[in-house]
Image (cartoon, rainbow, N blue to C red):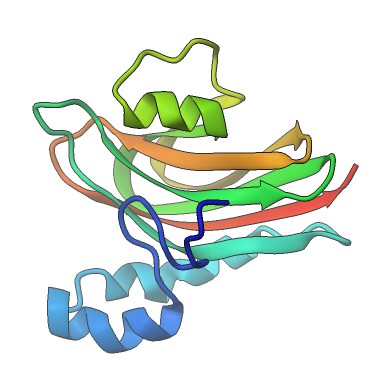
Length: 164
């Protein structure tokens, strides 16, 4: 892990409590509507025996002259397991979910082309509530969202692991 707390993210992720108190002041309640609809993520039941690694709101920045907006979360799998990524995008949007190894994340952050395909690359057409699962080994991973549009997009995300 990179020493970040569970709320640190590329982009923006925080607790529901922080959103309820801070959002109306900072953003005039724009993000609050997404939090109120966060229960749509609860429509995807947690797999029995799964351990939730992270759950929160991700604000994926708009595309810039440097390329697509990127936001996501670092996670750690302590053993070989299924990694489940549940997400809810409550507005009309086109995002791409990517699951990367730590090495691929480092390449991406340096602006270097990935030497291998991502572990997962899934197109999301919002509004949508869905999930994606892959098998991972003990290691650090980055679960990221790419936004190729010219406006920021939010997503509610829950990541969990379960024994393989």
